[in-house]
Length: 182
Image (cartoon, rainbow, N blue to C red; front, top):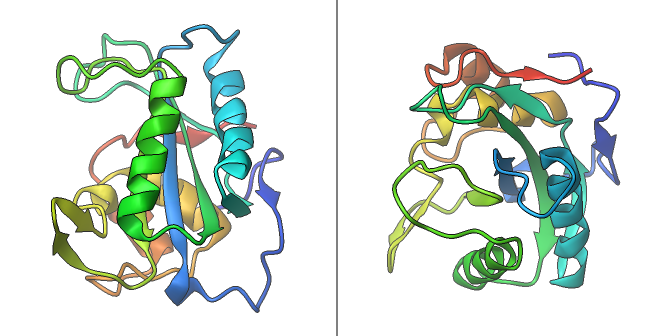
C-alpha cells in the first residue's frame, strides 16, 4: 500500500519495536459539532497528547461505506501507533472518556458515531482480561483497520495469527471498499 499524502510518521524508523506496538483505530461517520469527520478525527488525535498518549505514527484517513448498513453515512477511519504509560484497561478507559468528550452516545449497535476509538493491539498481549479482549477480535477482518496499519507498518504481525498487516489487508472481508484519501 502506498502511503497517502496525509500519512504522518513521527519517530517511526527501524528502532520502532513493532512487537511492542500499541495500536488505536479511529473512526467517525457523524461529524457532530465539528465541521467534518476529518476535523473531528484530527481533534481526537490532538486530545491524545493531552491524555498521556504519544503518537509515534499515524495513517492517512481512509474512506468507506458504513458497515453493516451502507445507508448510514460513510466512515472516515485511520490508525495510530502510540506510546503510553497507561496499562490496557486504563488506556481503554481513557479512550472511552475521549469518545464521550466528542459526543459519543452508545445507542444501538453500529449506529453512526461521532468518534469510535478501538484498542487494536497492546504489544503482543493476547486474551480476555476482565472484558478486554486483545488483540481486537474483529480487526483482522476489517480493511478499514488493516489497510491503515499496513500503510504505516506493513511488517507488523498480528499477535494471535502472526500474519503481517500487509497480508491481512489483502484478506480482509469487511469494508472492502475502504481506500486512503489522496
